[in-house]
Image 1 (tube, one colour):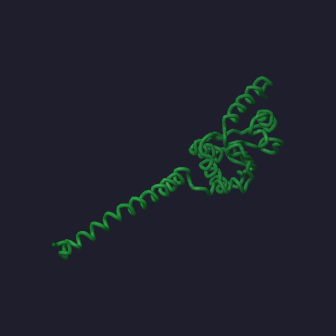
Image 2: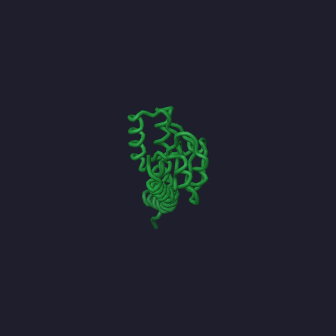
Image 3: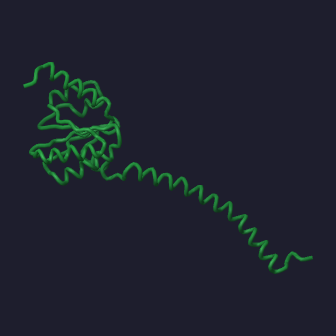
Length: 175
């Protein structure tokens, strides 16, 4: 059993990590085997996030006074948190895929960019395309408008050249 000073250090370390995290998912993990837990941690690291099993009381105390405080109130059962300051969509997708393969792993709630989201919000987040794909579509839309404008501007000169060329071929400009 841990001493009070060790528990205090754990709480302060958790508080520091959660204060830095912009995106946090609260999960339940009852009846996971060691192999399943190892696979879960590997999946979360692959998404660029961190994962920690927490004691409910330590989690509640660590979250007091920071944005995650609302999310970690009144914890019940076996709880863990997956958190990141990076892309929340990648983490939500990784956790959702894992939860489908392992029904004993469940979502309880989440916090994305400072807002608490429920299970439906997490599912909606997981169904979004990756950030890079969204950026690609946005750049395509910006570039498409500019490309159409250039095509129209070039079209006037091209049409004038065609008319002049046709006039020369038909000797319309002879005196």
